[in-house]
Length: 118
Image (tube, rainbow, N blue to C red):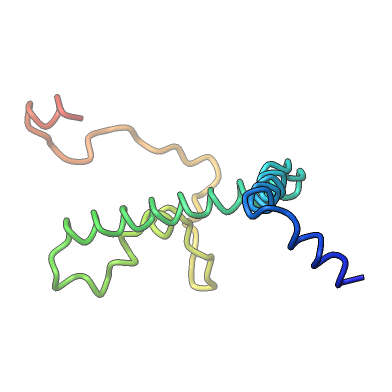
């Protein structure tokens, strides 16, 4: 059987053979992806965009912060700076007496310019 297939290939002109291959490759190229494949593509593209944004953010932060503080760069990362600290046993609350009402008043004096800014 293989001999017949080889003979058929040999009798076809070279141009027709390459055209058939190109047509077959075009058909493979234009198959519509499944929903799962599309979701995977979207996920990968989104991850790449987030990674690029993160790298740009790091470069900007590195330029703004003096080199001697670069060992503390993680403190300035947006994600880490926005998260809440974990509660610890030594955290405590200030319990007020029942019925206690805080007094309203000036905590400290501000100049006129400072008051306008606030």
